[in-house]
Figure (cartoon, rainbow, N blue to C red):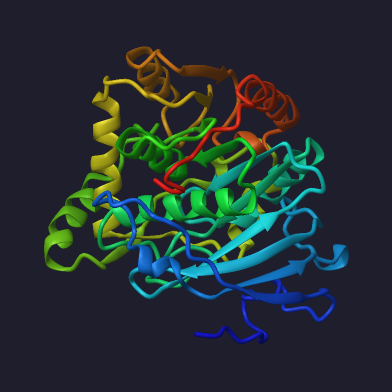
Length: 353
């Protein structure tokens, strides 16, 4: 199946401008996938992919957390037939690669600034939009089975390995992405150099509306695609005053969460809140001390129950999005220092988990 170059999200920018330099080529991949029942079907990986060299022009950048940096876009098609948007921020002489896993309601390009910091440190970055989020296809805020989100992380890891086969690979997950990453580490035990988990959803810092939760539980068995507002308080994202307005104005952000995925998330969080069997992969777990969205004490307690291979870092006074806080340079320096202590390439076989 060929992919057509057109004025679509495959090659266009958020503004639909005509100033972007686009170089596209078709690339065929047949990555090897293991036979674990939680792993995506190997046949689904044999999809045409489009890659483009792309850069946002400064004058059209209206989101303050985005940076004008070159990246390459590509996609894969998941087992549900949804086209999954992905992108790569390459560097000339990389010493490692990071796979980015975004949070609830958002998309990978809210991490352009973080990718720029990694690039300055000679670390390449690959990220994607989950199905039902950002520029990926699929019903907004929905997956029929929660394991589909883990399958996407497996495909992300494949993309990192295929592009950088001889380099250390790290996975970086924030908020919902942090919850998914912890679940992925526990269930699939990937052979990677390390994981960075930022403000994961283990418990919320607020009491979810019991009416909305109760309705979600009922509707999950009756109409799993029934959607409600995700109750995210934008004022709690960051102390940076530009972040909440930008989030609200971002056309790729949505606040819809279906009953199926919403209750699945709460159940996954409850499991993590009791989990005490250890994490086998070197993991940096970070949380802002004044996070009003996900509970920093839940992360601290998780680290205390699972001390082996896990480093916990609390950031007193910081809000939910550590990568957007005024102290983000200090946060990034700490992350990079931790990564440098774990920069050991891993002999990966098979090529996926």
